[in-house]
Amino acid sequence: MRRRVRRAIYAPMLLNIQFLDDATRPPLQKLEGLTDAQRAPGLHLRQVHDHLRANMLTLGKLIERANAGTVSQAEIAAETADLAMVANYRRFGNLCGQHCGIVEMHHSIEDYAIFPALAQQGPAFKAIADRLRAEHVVVHELLERLMAALNALAEEPTPARFEDTKTVYHALERVLLSHLGWEEDAMGDALGYFGLGG
Image (cartoon, rainbow, N blue to C red; front, side):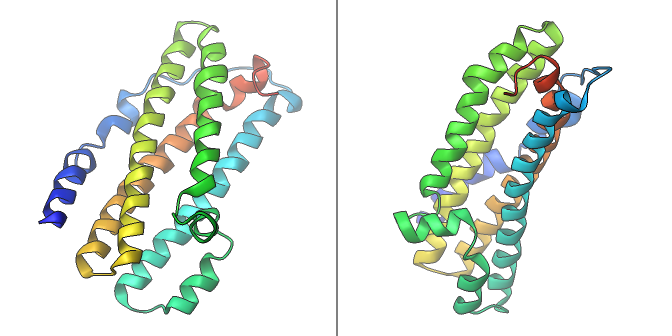
């Protein structure tokens, strides 16, 4: 019964991910004549995002291997030792822990400082900032759902919980990778061009 309730919660959101479809996003704005110094904040943003991409890839591979029974608990522990989410599980009792606080702070800085400043650069950039802010809501919801699924899986590793975890993971992966790439393209150059990136 509990599993049915959880699926009912996940299904509507997971089946409706076209929210991050490029066709529904505002057009990118091309900024000409940027210096290397102006490109630096956007490159830094990409480096931060690359770390998130690497953690997601490692986590996804482990979920698949654990589901297939091709990885032991010791191997999982060894391969995830450096993942921020797993270190937080050990330290704080849940997979999100301090990492979610850092992501929340990162998005809060963007939502309350970077995006309003970007929006002041004209209607095209306002549309981009509004869309990025809205995408943060979707990313955070899926992140919370993945953390809940992973915690449930750790508590009771049943086939149904593996399926739940894989479903949510793949939804988050699809949304997060799309969001990160578009955010870099949409505002990476603008950070330095308009002096918004430090």
